[in-house]
Image (cartoon, rainbow, N blue to C red; front, side):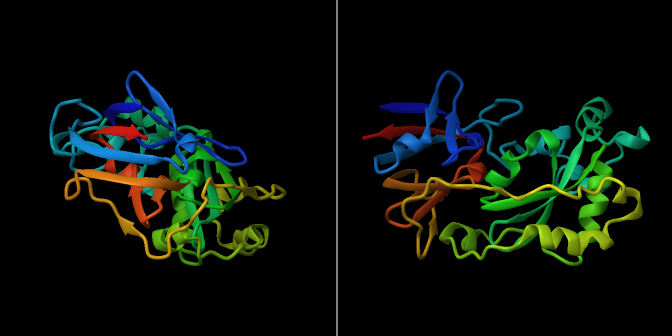
Length: 264
C-alpha cells in the first residue's frame, strides 16, 4: 500500500495503547497497524503548511516568510508569558490571538525523561503530553488565559525543568515520579495572580505507548540527507517512529515535507 502527502504531526487518541494516525489531504493511516511491518519513507519535496507553496521549510512546517508573518508562529506560542491579548494589545493578529490566548489554559507537570513543567490549552489535554512522550502527567493550575499560565510556568521553571531529554524519552530510560507530591511541593512557588486557580485533588494520567522495542543507541533519520529509508517499525512514542535498526524519525520536526509512504 502507498500513501502520499504533506507531513503534519500525528493525531492521537488516548487508549491502551495510544492510537496514532498520519492524516493526509485525502487519506489517513492508522500507524499502530504498521508495527512489525516494513515501511518505506521517501522524500518528495516541501510544501509550507500555511501558504501551501512549494517552498523550503524554515521552522515548524512553515516557509521563511510565513514563519515571520503569521500569528501561529509568533513568540508567544513558545513563550506564553509574552501573551498580550488580555490587554487588548496586538502582536501579529489580535483576532487570532484573542481566540487562542483568552481560552482556559493548563499548567502541568509531566514526566517524559524527568519532571518538567509546561503549558497547554485545556483542549490539548492529553494530546500535548502524548506528543512529548510523557508516560505520566498531572494538571496543577487551570487559568482563564495564556498569560497567567505563562507566568506560572516561568516561576516554576526555577525548581523543575521545562525541556524533555529526547534521548532518555526515546530509549525509555525513565524513572516514575509521584507527581501529586511534586504538585504539593511546588504550590508555594505559584504566582499570587494564579494561586486561586490551583487544582488540589486531581490524579495523574498515565500514557501507554505502542512500543515493542526501544532503541539502545537511537540515530535520527534526516530525509534531506537520506531521501529514501526502509525499515521495520517497532514502536511509536511522542511524535517519533522507532525502527528495528534503531533509526528514529521525528514526524513533527519534518512537518511540511511531502513524502511517499509504502507498506510491505
